[in-house]
Image (cartoon, rainbow, N blue to C red; front, side, top):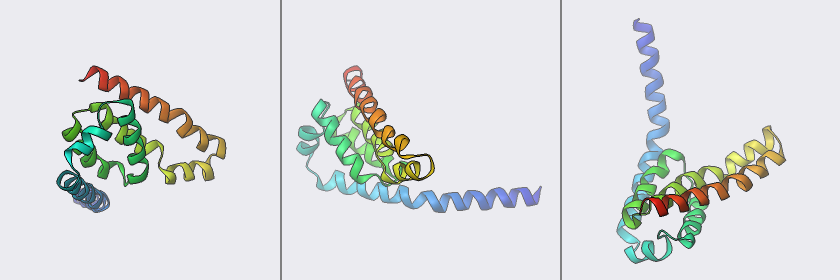
Length: 137
């Protein structure tokens, strides 16, 4: 039993060391965004419109640090814009446009699958984000 507990504790600490730094980085970036990006930028360019969704998609494509680190940034987008669809788009588009995931698919599964991932997923993310913005006004 002691050996099992030691193994679980060691694994939990290793996981925390791996993930915690990304969460801290996301919190720092969200704090900087909240403090230094003017509120009117969020409302004008990242509001609950179709253009706002595409701007959010572009930012998510560039900023994707990891899913855990993106969560504080997604919350900051929601806090500034009150657009749940934009937060959803930020979280999901970061994953489906991540070049490391596309590269892994390209290498391990094939180039057709790697190309289909963003071609199929990005329109779905935009549509679901738009629906979320319409439903949760």
